[in-house]
Image (cartoon, rainbow, N blue to C red; front, side, top):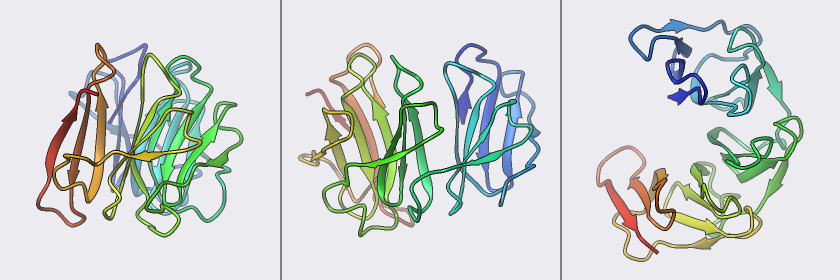
Length: 212
């Protein structure tokens, strides 16, 4: 689910049947048009924090798509080729035209609002050899060059302090770090980070916390 930053009653959801939109805080939902999409099976969705009319959608196995009119029609974004499903979409909180996606081959970065993309740092444990890739991304709200990435299939949680160019694994003390699907940074204390972890196919999951 994605919340429109300057209009919090407008929400978007990515579902198996396609993208949906609510304009009343989630009380009712309407399926948005799928004009232009190759498939409606949606993995994740995000709203541009600088322009609420721009919505990004990641269909399963079909890269990244963008709508410039609130989800009424879609066009494909030119990610680096052969990178697999996009699982996560995040924006630099200081410079929203800089955005990142986590996908089957690691992390890609755009500095022009999603028009062009560059594949950056391949994670330790190798998103290049793990088609399940980067499942979660989070950016430090006070220091945007500090990022966290959660991967699938045993590598776990990673941290970058240079905008994603290089990454360091940080699994020490984590419970069941096989797959990290969710990362949340405390908005009042960026040193406090939560990671939801588990196993592909279910079972054995948990919530992990670090304060350093």
